[in-house]
Image 1: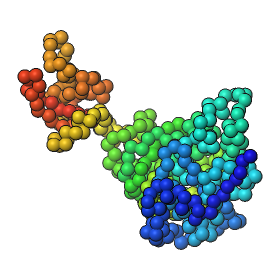
Image 2: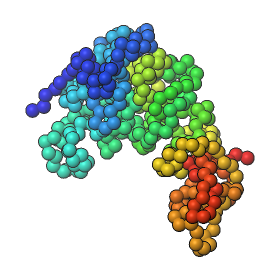
Image 3: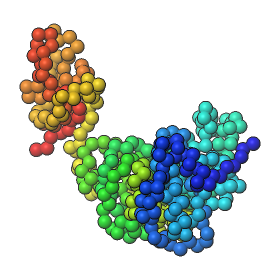
Image 4: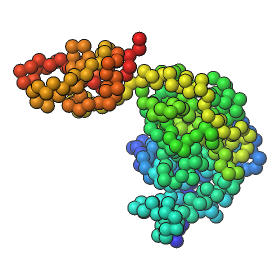
Amino acid sequence: MYLTRFFTAAVLFAASSLAFAADPRPNAKDLEKINAALPESAPAKPKQPRKVLIYTKATGFVHSSIPVGAKTFELMGNKTGAFFTVISDDPDSFMPDNLKNFDAVLMMSTTGSLFVPKGAKEDLLYKKDAPLPDDLAHTKVLRDSLISFVKGGKGIMGIHAATDSSYQWKDYGIMMGGYFNGHPWGHIVMRIEDPTNPVNAAFGGNPFEFNDEIYTFKEVYSRERQHILTSIDIAASKIDRGFNRPADHDYAVSWLNKYGDGRVFYCSLGHNEATYMNPIVLKHYLAGLQFALGDLEADAKPSGPLSEERLAENKAPTLYAWQDLGTDKTYQDKKDVKEQTFTGELEAIPNTGAPGIIQRTSFYKLGDKTVFTGGKKKPALDALVGKKVDIRGKAVDMELEGQQLHEIWPASVRPAKG
């Protein structure tokens, strides 16, 4: 027998926050900042009283910002009158008889495989006609309920790690709009892709500079299915490493999606507690949620593929990107030597077959220094042999087995400009 449990906000936050810190969050100072940042009013008048289920259960990495984010939306709904919230970490909230009482669901950094009990063999869910044990049969009921809820004309909003979830459940990925592909950056300038879209009104048509844990996305992310609202302006952000979409270097931050007759809004911001205290972000969140609820009309047609001009613009900053070579504990422990940048033509050291220093095989040199890579070849260096490069690393001079060594211990490399 499965019981449905709904939690009042006060009980949920007391329990959840204590798990994260001795000083439960949101604390009084957090609440003061959140209330100061909340929008004064909603951009659209609700067509009818709206009810939003905020789901907070994470079975993967548990973000400490979850209770802060959930409380923010509770306060936002109360202040603006745009919606009423129920906050729950109970999967049975998604039983059809319960879910029908809501107009939208908000997935608050819900990592892990949604609704799959611990220890269950999730793979069985994806085997056609495979008999399911009772626990997974119940998982399927909950998943089918969510898909039907949105396809049938309701809404869903995803915050941050809602895309770091349910990688095998492709219907969820397509609905949400993509899967997590990494978080290489912390500071970005956001490009406002559709300045006239009412969900983007908070930005006033201006680029938005922000600090948070920034996600990138892999399939099923697609501009041919989603309406991209904001993305990372690579050049303006001065990003010089961490690129992981070589085909297009398209790094979206927020988007709209139509799924059946339903509406989807996703925004990758939300890792840090401070994000929920930023008035511009909160206005963007509110407008996106009102779109998902069906109260704010907005263009959600797919953006379509990037132009050749935009692809070239995206690619240009990546041509001189740093590539990490990996460092070990020996490198990290050598704190008395500062990192610096070495520039010159990277040369390959031919293997002459002559005896050398035991366990000191090297394959590269830069000027009069050997580039020591722990006796292993590095593909990133191989690709740059014979070219002018910048190597970020440490200069180490030492005597070993009677020989004086002058080495560069590399941490990263990139093609040099000029």
